[in-house]
Length: 162
Image 1 (cartoon, rainbow, N blue to C red):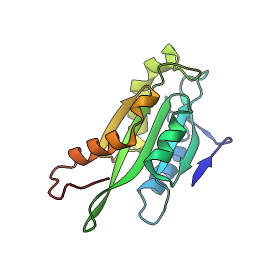
Image 2: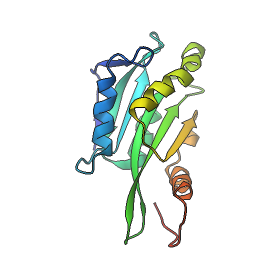
Image 3: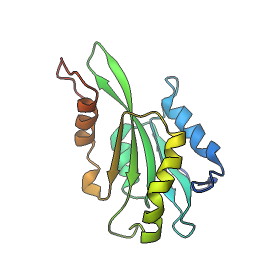
């Protein structure tokens, strides 16, 4: 189930104004008692410093990537499960979306701010297993990302699948 949000408070990553917008999403995704498994924050390009929650959902990594590819540059956080029938483990990954072409191409002045702002984003979305930076729709490959997360998880005795 995907939730598209059009009116939401902006979160200023330069001065950390409105950090609670990110904190609420982080806590919902990390919670075992909540079905929400992703959220994405896209830049308001004219401000160069503010992001807004453009969507969240509980439909998994593919739903997350389908949302991201339609967005301006920004940051996302997603929960996935790895393991086998005996042992399922929640894993979390952080995504920096830096569109390199098309209508949502990241302006150079925003791109210059992203590394600084990512540090602010990571102060809220602090616990994750893997981190990715993608710039094209082809990069948003759920199977490849899951394989990377599984490999990063260490021992894989049972040939675990996503």
